[in-house]
Amino acid sequence: MSGIVGSFFNHRGSGLVANLGTDGHSFNSGGAGVKAVTEAAAAAGVDTSGTPANNQLAIFTDADTVEGSSNVVYDGTNMTLTGGNLIIGTAGKGIDFSAQTQTAATGATAVANGEVLDHYEEGTWTPTLVAATPGDPTFTVSNYDPFYTRIGNRVFLSVNFYKRGDGAAPSGTSGDLTLGALPFASMVTGTNYGFIDLHFWTAFHAVSNAVQITFINYDGTSTMDAIKVQDDADGYMNLWTPLVFSDLGGWSHFSGLGQYMTET
Image 1 (cartoon, one colour):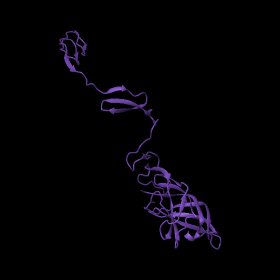
Image 2 (cartoon, one colour):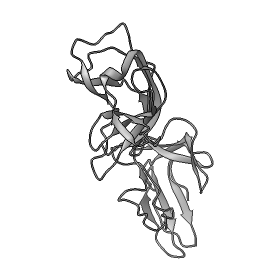
Image 3 (tube, rainbow, N blue to C red):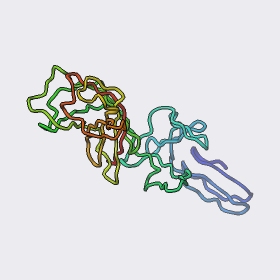
Image 4 (cartoon, rainbow, N blue to C red):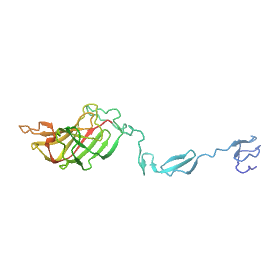
């Protein structure tokens, strides 16, 4: 006995009693003397014409189509992106390293979520140099693309700028100097001091005995105080005093590197 177009006939014994089925059905006989029954054929199903090659990730491009992605390869152990980037779509989430062995050093404790790398950023910034009076960056500063890189809650940055002699400050400018416009506000929790140490500076007044000029950052601010570190009368580096506007020459040049912590 045979079926019509689109039918399937399965006979596993003698004594089959059956009628022809309609298109899209199958006949099945369980054995001798058993009347065959019809079964509905499977639905059209998923289009797998784009079946993934070995180790490719299968991706549904719509509800009924699956294809292999040539940009994502998984060999059973490692997953490789051969094109594009891995995008973390939710702020505060990242790569979780909690399966690693935490430090066992005495007094060292990992903070909550301290094994999740949740931020990376690099770019340039535009620092300002502010005098206490009149309290705004009213004298000209020229920058040479100072950079920053943030990894987690740690910000690494550089400064490379000078106070231009042809951009004189207004009459009355004086007082302590502050470096402003940090890329991120510093951490508020705990005591977290950041710094930028100058490895090169020129055209300064009254700082001949200074062994270091640095910018120091305090909790929760986007500024750093300018400090000059000088030798005391005994030749020890014990004098920490603010760098003030009158210390600057006509073309004072600042260049240095530093880091600080942020939590925003």
